[in-house]
Amino acid sequence: MNKLITLDEFILQRQKDFPFATGELSGLLRDIGLASKIISREVNKAGLVNIIGQAGTENASGESVQKLDVMADQLLISCLQNSGECCGIASEENDTYVPIKNSSNAKYVVMFDPLDGSSNIDVNVSIGTIFAIYRRISDDGDCQLNDFLQDGVEQVAAGYVVYGSSTMLVYTTGKGVNGFTLDSSIGEFCLSHANMKVPQNGNIYSINQGHYNKFSPEIQQFVDECMDKQLGFRYVGSMVADVHRTLIKGGVFMYPATKSSPDGKLRLLYECNPLAFIMEQAGGKASNGSHRILEIDATRLHQRTPIFMGSPNLVNRVEELLQKEPSNADANNVSAMA
Ligand code: AHG
Ligand code: MN
Ligand code: MN
Image (cartoon, rainbow, N blue to C red):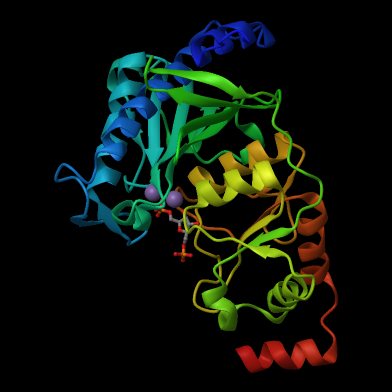
């Protein structure tokens, strides 16, 4: 039987990859792992206690907040407060960043989507948590907004947890991607997917096809090509679940701009950047249609971006279509869409 390697053991083993790390980054990852175990427990009994349904409030993106969103957000904040390694957090559920008082001199800031795929909570479909860790750039004392408005290439670590048929935590510190499955009988995340690599080509496309009529002609052409080639179609509606499947099976996950959402729907800082870091580290690609997601200028905490990510061959085709000079026909199409 292969030796069981827990997340804590793995993090400590890999700590030597970071000569400058004094265990603080390891501590942060462990704290996020702890919060994820508790969220997993709550998610798995959500139907039994009065924790599903709407909290009756809206978040910064104007979306109705689910009770589980709030619980997950507060859990992550309290675990990160206890660690002493994090001087501030920013999350989907908070309009602005939140300085962590008892560790204002800590080196790291953390951004997260505490519960991704909220619309799926009440129907028992996979949901997730997404996190990104940056080194602060402000001097000591309370963290500042610019600590959070860093480009994705500055991430020191990123990952996600998917609460599905099993609970998995997948993360990278820039030295490859590793996946851990929660063994709830011992309460430990155990290494189950070492050195994850995305297939270079793929035969699954993932997009909310219901928005087809709102896509640009180029995206409509790509979707038509996928159907002509009889690619499989999968769309869960939780980004973490769709990206996790893409990471393992290959394919392309897309949330493009539409007429009504010219910047798409997904948020750069706590959805797209961390998942793009993971995808690139696994040999995949993540683009807004013309540029690397990780090089997009971060200017607002809740800014959105179109995203195309997964097997490089498929992402390259999307970019090719989006960057080709519009033919007269296309130009006419675009003006017709306006
Ligand atoms: P969140 O629940 O954190 O707001 O994220 C939901 C996002 C993402 O998980 C998913 O890919 C997307 O919303 C689905 O949007 P549509 O329902 O418009 O397809
Ligand atoms: Mn989300
Ligand atoms: Mn969310």
